[in-house]
Length: 325
Ligand code: UDP
Image 1 (cartoon, rainbow, N blue to C red):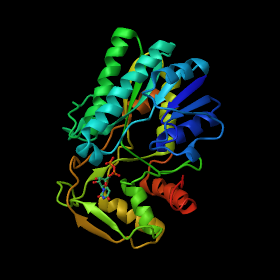
Image 2: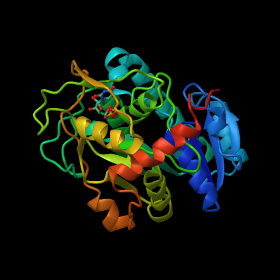
Image 3: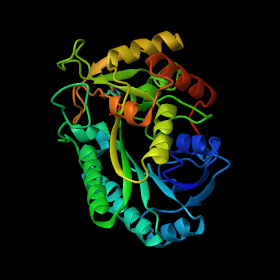
């Protein structure tokens, strides 16, 4: 079976591509390297450097490699950036997303796994977030991901295209020699590790006046390899239908707790000061993974924050400055 990994040179896409190869699947990585890294592309994969909006190249690639499944990771995914440039998010996450579905139809590929997000829920009515809660995003990132979820719904209803939506909570950690390297980096764990490596001075906590026990935002961190595994299970078990799963650990950690854990693991003092809230940030996001555990028998191997940060720390120590390409 051949899987096209759209965005396979990015953080989550590259780890999933490597895990697919390990499990014996053929992999085509399709990435324009706008935000991905050539060095993150696993050696055993075919690499196509092209835009997903390039309809003709995508259709030719899908047909040439007899692709059975598309895993779509190639989105813009930053809450803060989306609050400044919503047009970028509508273009990449909705307009390009539609081109992918149309290319799949043209090439006769009938199953897609979509990297969605807990940001589609906005400020949830209760925690942990189950799949049935209403989705009211509070930023263009979540809104455009939800728009693509709805597009999938109608392509399924009207064109018979099957899909699995996986709504990630906070992906973190490293696996298969691959790790997190964004430019600019905005995510809390790699930022903290850059401080520990002496690459930056300290960290700013974005607000400590949230309605949470210590006043800082709570998030649910999930290891990248556990995420990758969920994609493969979905593809193996749910390819003939439309399904939706939340993908978190069911445990939330505050920004202060993440900083404390990173201090323990790295042995670095990690100076932290409190700054303004980041626009678009909900106070607490914690996911329920009961449905995916029940239906797909998904079992996280790295459920605790410490082992997640530890794996990221090992990768960052080996790759100071990131992929450097
Ligand atoms: N955060 C922070 N300082 C930073 C970066 C992030 O306090 O320099 C907070 C952010 O407000 C959020 C949490 O850390 O509550 C996780 O943010 P991240 O950007 O890693 O992921 P997101 O939740 O936006 O997907």
